[in-house]
Length: 80
Image 1 (tube, rainbow, N blue to C red):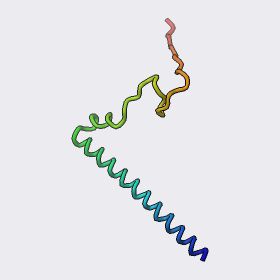
Image 2 (cartoon, rainbow, N blue to C red):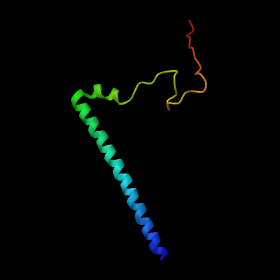
Image 3 (cartoon, helix red, strand yellow):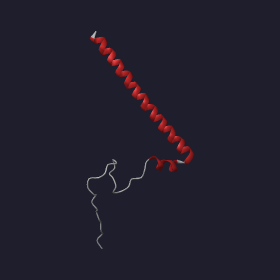
Image 4 (tube, one colour):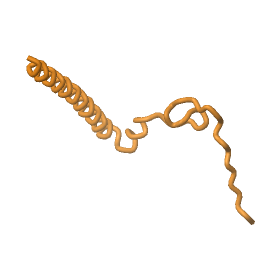
């Protein structure tokens, strides 16, 4: 009886994993299809900058969180 429960639990877990993988695959397929359409209609260099917003310096870190302290300013000078 316990073995039957384990087999059923494993089967449900496998079905759930397959569902998650199928959903992820469809999302990737859709994203690449949209990228191909944008590249075809606008050209490679016109479509790629629209994929992510520009990073504003000083406002936030790379992960989108506000920085706890200001970034140090490094000045470089050459010897004459």
